[in-house]
Image (cartoon, rainbow, N blue to C red):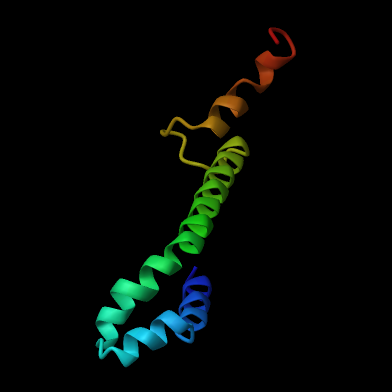
Length: 90
C-alpha cells in the first residue's frame, strides 16, 4: 500500500497542474491536499478493496483449516463444520 501511494505521489508531483499550482504560489501542504491527494485516491481505493478481499479469503481459509478462533462464527468455520454433513445431506 505504501509503495502504491508513494509511486502515485511521485508521478503526480511532476504533472502540469502541480507545476501550475506551484507557479501560482500555493504552499506545499495546500498542493498536496487540493491537487495531488484527490488525484491519488482512485488507485488507493482500488488497492484497498483488493486487500480487504484478500483478508476475507485468508481468514476463511484459516478458519476452514481449524486455525482460526473457535469462538468466532465465520464462513470458513461454517464450511469446515459442515464437512461431515455434506456427504449425507448435500
